[in-house]
Length: 220
Image 1 (cartoon, rainbow, N blue to C red):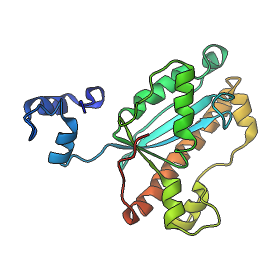
Image 2: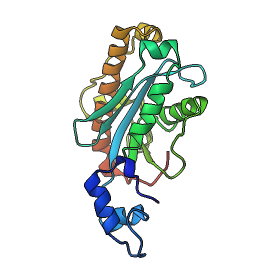
Image 3: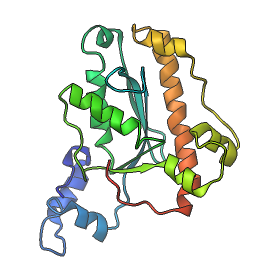
């Protein structure tokens, strides 16, 4: 696997170019060797999207957030009034994919069935390149909770109430999701706030559950 130079710092690229793996190749060429031999920790991002419909051929992405693990940085974008009037979510889908590639692994909740397929579908509709098999690892906290816990529901907020002691998410008020399609800024701001709380809550759930399981190298 070639090194993802687009998301590496200059000093990291220099280090990779100078080093040689056990196979005799530059770490730029054998990036996986560098991660194994140098025990470089994965760059993890907590991913969540908000959309106007559960099906990607009937709805569009309204916002996305990707929070870096153990840090405060959140990469995000939202639809704008101009987007709504022209190419819909093409710009933010492209931006979302670029931000996903900053990480080695993205973590979501029910993202196996929703977030990842939705983004991939919108990307293909817009003729955008989506990460291919093996490019990016993925973990779904929904399935972690389903296996590890015994709750009446495996919804993210139910899990958070049980193991974190609180639910910080705002309610889903349908009018905001509808008006966001018209580029209403108040609605877009509400959705983004909801989206940010989602990834914060997601990280909290993952940090508690991950010690009871093993992260497998599962591709998006």
